[in-house]
Length: 139
Image (cartoon, rainbow, N blue to C red):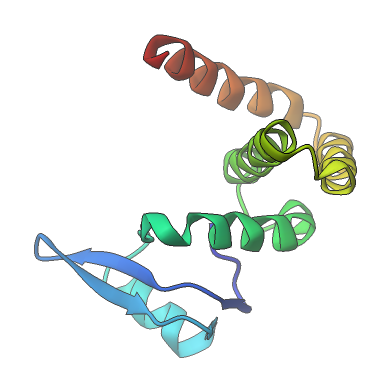
C-alpha cells in the first residue's frame, strides 16, 4: 500500500517482462506523473527488498490514519494495512518489550476504522483468519 501524495523512503520495484526493475527510487514523492505513468503500464503491484521491510512498516505506521480516512481506498486494502501494521507492532512489543505507545496508536486507528465503516469488523476478521490459518499451518 503506497499512499498517493506521500514520500516513499525506500526503493520500490515492479515486474516488467518477467524481470524486476526499479520503479520508484527512494525519497521520491509518489504522485501525479510518476503514479500515472506506473499505473498506465499496469504496475499496481510493487516489491521491496527484504532489508527495506522495517522501513516499509514504519511508512505504513506513519500513514495508517491517512489510509483509514481515505474514502478512495477500498475497505479490504484498509483492513490489510491495519492488520499488517498492528501485527508488526505486536511482534516488536514481544521481541523488544517496547512499542506500547505505537500499540495505543494502532488500537485507536483500528477503533476509528471500525467506527467509520460497519463492514470493517468483518473485513478485519477475514484478513486475520486467512493470516492465522497460514501462520498455524507454517508453524
